Image (cartoon, rainbow, N blue to C red; front, side, top):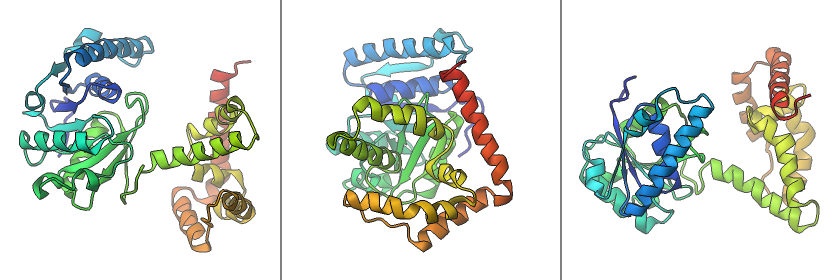
Length: 317
């Protein structure tokens, strides 16, 4: 399905909590009509006020050029789930992280929408096969996870996680909708709890807690290492590109020099995930398709330019 530049598509959001609010801001500021379902009228009132504040904040930073009232008018609240999803071309479920809450909502949304409408869950860790385990096959084929960073209107990445039963056209439609909303979809090719985002985040958090427990550093010192070090590089590069550019010769050279130390650090935590020659070769081959070693020096200069731009913002002379 192709989403037009006019964004005539209507999106239904199931839940007016923090993620529902953020998705409402995202889709409405990109021109979509948005129907927000929540059974609690008080939650709707809180959400409406929060959406208005966030749209005003975006406008103050030059991210929204429309009249905020025009943006807000694209959003409609309802206590009727059927009223939210009927006529919608995309459903984003934003309920609490509990299967027994999410599955009935998805089942009911399916009963009021066409067979080509994706049913996307905002689940942070629950895989779509679990969400669809008790759903009919014709509903399960429409189910996937669309897990955003929080808040999605400021963090453009979104993980698109299909189940083995998810229809390819449903995946394509979800990717198309997210891209039309200015997001950068990442297809997660295999179901794993926590997907990519929370597994990476969890690995760092686990080590941070261990360092605190072992008296190596304080909470603020650990955060400072990320704020002023890792986080600055990671704001525009991922861990593979960071390692690729850290050592002349690229990822293969980095793995040769640093792999044994990282293996020892992992073993200290009971993690025995060695960087085997085959694994390093695969990672290196993928990096070389993205960056020829002949262009390595130029990319290092690019990295330093980005860091200088960040330094000008965070540490002005």
